[in-house]
Image 1 (cartoon, rainbow, N blue to C red):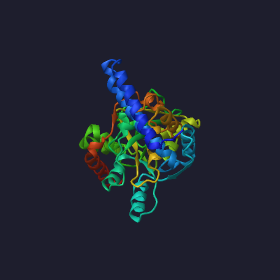
Image 2: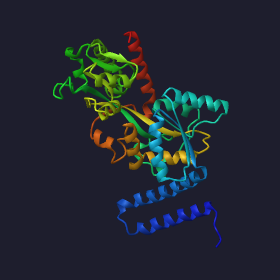
Image 3: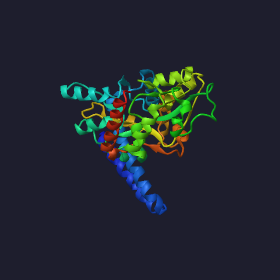
Image 4: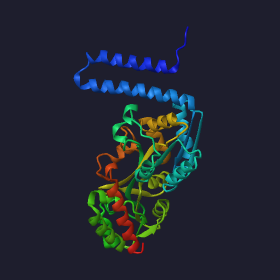
Length: 355
């Protein structure tokens, strides 16, 4: 029997899928017709990516999580797509990811296939033409997770008020941002000395209100740290009874038996982490496939289990259940200039206050 080339097989699959949908359209209620067409097109587009990934069989990732975590994540991905035989991940900080990609691209040296980082740090890469524009919706990526034409939201930080349950009862812990300004907490708390989460709060409060709040917060003399890990450690060890820090650090400490808990003060400041495909990627299809998988319930849950950083925009994830209907604070993609302005204002204030 004559074997058709893969490109013809893909074309035939696409035509058959559309014919099936057109046949169903006459039988389906009008409200589901658009969905049927979209799902058929997404399945066809994803088939093309899968065929390309089969030829590549490899992917290289730049992201901040540990190699141990990615080993578990990729193990699950390879179980789903066993034709991906090789992978490599380099653990880079948020600042190092764009620097590394720019330098390697300038030198014409090999670089990664995909990166994961906060959206604002991706903007310079996009402006330099170093991130591939992808029709993510056409691939079936959930619309809520699509950040812009280039990147997809994969997980996020959520900032909370963490506390030591041996030192503060759930009844007495502050439930609001204003509660942290109470003089009774003066000199007793901890925080991550950074523009976050205050720049995120500025998306809801405005810069002026955020600056006024931060001045009062600094006057309460909380102990600053350069890392979120240290802040969580202080709370767990009882060095401070409460602190402003990121949720996943407290979850990791609690999992190890530390007496910690947390409160979501609304609006909850968040820092999304987004994934994109790097221009010139040797394994672009595998990169797209991995990003797509990370936005499925299976992939999102695997990532969250290994990192405690979840995706509230993927239905059925633990993080989505945890965040529920909480009001969040963050600058969307089309407000990047406002984000930059707010971040600079916060950083300038911290410098003036000697923090």
